[in-house]
Amino acid sequence: MPHWRTAISKDEPYLHWWDVEGHTPCKVTVTAVRMVEEKNRDGESVTMLVLDLKGAKKPLGLRVTNATIMEKLTGEEDYEKWVGATPTIRIAMCSDDKCIRLDVPPGTKLSKNIPKFKYID
Image (cartoon, rainbow, N blue to C red; front, side, top):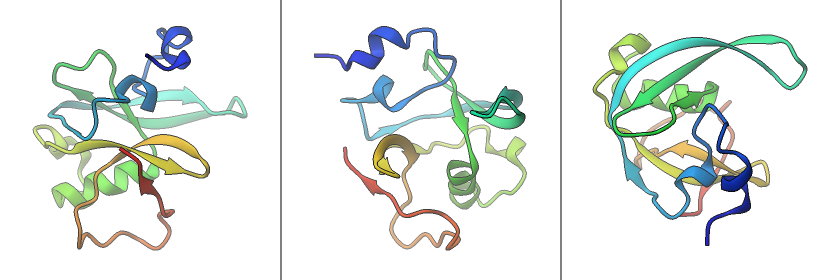
């Protein structure tokens, strides 16, 4: 049975954990990376990276944690060079809520500023 959020969140512009629940881990291919202006919870304008994914109905918006993971996975700081990368999407627990995280292979060193999370899929 689908999660209730799928019924009320069809118009959400970006991929959320409930969109991929039951289908993760899932390897995806990045077809484009773009910058968009969005409003944060305080109504302030913020810039966000967005990954368009092959075959996906919605793009994946990246905040600092997933963008840092993409940099580590690709070895590239230049986000335009992330096109063609094939990260794996997973569901994790982040601050007591479910979220989408890109898979961090064992042995990958992340900054100590990246919060700890646990995959639950």
